[in-house]
Image (cartoon, rainbow, N blue to C red):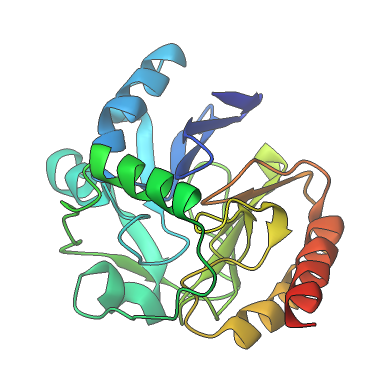
Length: 241
């Protein structure tokens, strides 16, 4: 799915993966679920590209529904995978967390679990090797991704600002469709290690100039960063009242 001249998405509002397409090659943001591999190949073909054009994968964090086909790309095609140093162990399968689920509705939860099962979400291969990044890094990859630390959902959660795509990729720092309740619009994401910390970290996005705010779960948001942050803060305040 083409969102802009340099921006594509595979997957859907349940689990999304993004591709930044430049003359220098492709940067993939997150690697979704293992079974989205064929979706990746199909999107590359539609773009007139191949796996040989992929220069790197940047993970917004190390959870299993974001690393799905990353090891396959690294192992079989030599594509480096970048993750914040605080989430490196999580991406390698050495650490995990069990945050509270919060409120759940049966239909959205069932839809999420069914999609994850259908896309081999239970067969995720942890990464063997990663390239670690830190807040403030600018990566030598297509689009020159700029790393913005957003700890909270996980210790190493990041946003990735790519001016060439007019986008900031936020992983699970926020969501625009809650996979457990089906609620739409920018709001705090579920399965968050430190909800208060995640909310506070959104202030790090203030001043980022991007039309697109792209979460790992939910509808792509194209009304700018400031409004997205305000909406998440409103939703958090409403749920707390």
